[in-house]
Image (cartoon, rainbow, N blue to C red):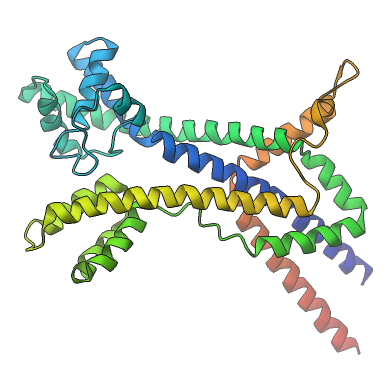
Length: 349
């Protein structure tokens, strides 16, 4: 019985530990999603890849190739929604391209519309280059998201001055802290919806469906296919090509609903982050609690605290979904073990 209780205590330590790491990870995920949406990182990544292709085949300077890339991504036959009158203005550059994906077969025509001369032979070379660097663009985007996640993790861990090894040690030695902390954190987690990652493009389609119920079947098919806003908009345009509906009005409405969903997605991320902060406050974890002294005291660097924060940042960089799944698995294991112990005790009696 003591052995079984010992296992339950160890599981309790992990539940408390993972719960707090999860709360901090939700803050990190909220920050990453807010930055990614605001900066249009995927669209900018596509622009950079296209710019490198133009550099290679037309040998233009950086500004000129960048302008042609922006114009190509603003071509009327691929940028159905969010098209700009002039994509090369300072404001348009700051906002970034409206689309984050382009079908390779549409690329040559987009480059021609941007003002570049492209014959059949050069067209094949451009398509070969695009297909060759696509994986490179995807890897570059993922690496940037990883770097952004790591930076946000370091900011969150550093601001809360949180040391994962120190927490693990406290939970292992303080039974009362473990019981109180696990109870309070589990209660707080029940209010977290984990909805910050909802896709704005699909959410906009769902809103469009309620406004155009006669298109329910077609929109449902698009939602199940998935894809970004530009991909879904292009498919929606194809669906409406033979329809009696006003295609322009529907596409414009989808554009408006997407921008609304994007704003809501950011709000959800911030709300989830605020809930996580409130949950942390209940267990006395607040921002910048010890000041600079936590890192530097009496002329000496506090290496133990710095290393603890670094370990925390690495753990947070795994992301909230990762820790949410770990927590569910540990809680299931605890419940199964507790049920087994109760059954065993009942049998002995």
